[in-house]
Image 1 (cartoon, rainbow, N blue to C red):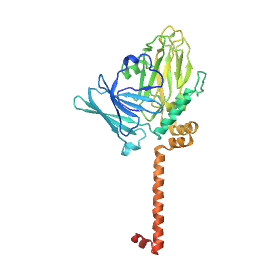
Image 2 (tube, helix red, strand yellow):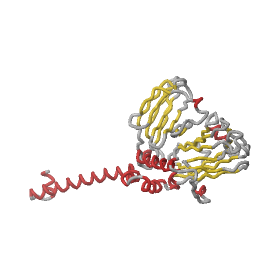
Image 3 (cartoon, rainbow, N blue to C red):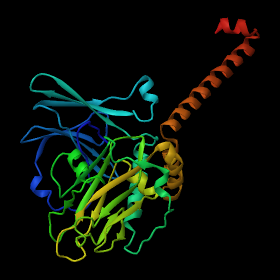
Length: 357
């Protein structure tokens, strides 16, 4: 997913836009493909000329506004694979670089990175298959989790790579995160009295995997607790009139699908007398190594994909390198066999045959 140091991302699902966003929609123009990066596009806002990056995959559509400090005169983007030591770092697989030309003549550079783990579009195919599985879940779906599920990772809410976005709140991502801190007495109230509220979490670190979320409800408005929380196609019920933390651990499939971004929908309040209220949010995550990302991808691919597709996801870029090595070895053995055949036909020794060749 595209990255930027001071911006937020919102994952756009298949449903309608959340209430409250329509009034803030701004048209964009000058849409362009990024050469060499399928599914990655750039555009500029017609009103402010602020640029954005759009990443389209089989699993999701991700929008990343770029927020430079001054007015932009133009943007350009190109594929930029990592080189040297950066290419070997699991968190630095650069897919593209976007340059923004400011009105004062300066340039700013923004990177779009691909999640590591190999597979590229094959990994996206796995995510798409998992999303289809989530759509088959019903309101009766109940999952069992270990009591110590969150102990496998740590709270990463304060990480600059984790961004919170609530459709009912205005302001910079940092201010939203501060309002939803466990140490704050503030809260966010839904904009629509009888409508839901959506919380979106974005992760720009390719080495971080979300493993769960905790929500504090009922602290300031005990009778405006959302009647339920919906995430990844499943529904979690709540209790009205009670201040409580709701622990929402993720399954391995949910963590893989939501690695870059995920959303939670808070239903209208139990009483129906007002909009839902959210008091605090804590996001928990683990490193790819702690999570066992490759092992989980392999297991889920065997279950949800065809054998050939699962093999591609598991092998990924490493599988391509192995095939290239095998082709090179086969070519070398063929040349060696021809060399010995020529040497045998001429009756000369190794050195003579080599000289003849």
